[in-house]
Length: 235
Image 1: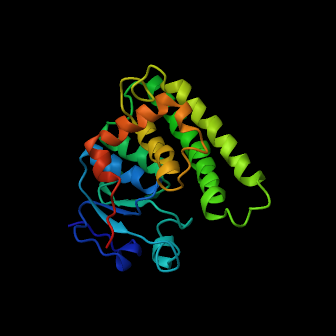
Image 2: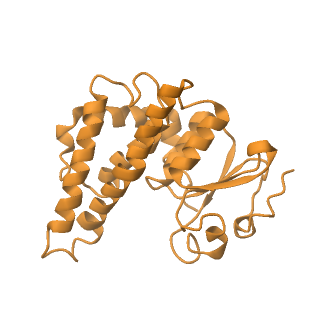
Image 3: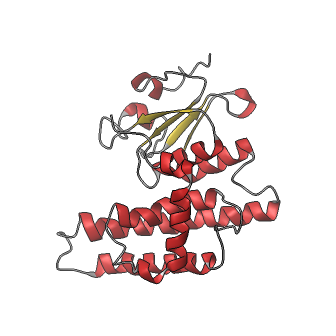
């Protein structure tokens, strides 16, 4: 049996089976990336629901695994050289899982690097911009009621990024063509989430992006997505 005692987070959220991947997350656009990937890859894992706030992501135990205090994070008891490894940042975790299994990332070097470009496009652009749009559009609307600039700035940049996806997905099934990859997994929860969590589809003119809408439907229809989108479940 694996010994995860070196990870303080396991004291607060004990592993029932320390021999499998431990996932610390919430079903947010960032969090479900990893649960969807784990489901796609068929890797056994144990999900721990980490709430926002001082007793969750800001707790010393969680900070010990992710100093940035954000979900998701994982511990893989069977990491490089057979040793346990703790990882944070959703994009890094997806690359790790893909390379660990040899799946969801093209085997050829050119395809691999092109996929990573689209992963970084999401991490640096789609996620941050849609997140800021949602904040000002829904959660802080009252605070900017007399100043439309913040919402409009992030709305317009979000629409520009979605238009980039629209151009990429025209006549393509997936971001990389015929192959479903971590580029799709890292991106679709955010584009979907802008509507599901923020009610922003009309403001972002989703009707004007038919290729993106069809792609989201294909992504969500995958059995691994249907399951992963609900993990970790509510207590």
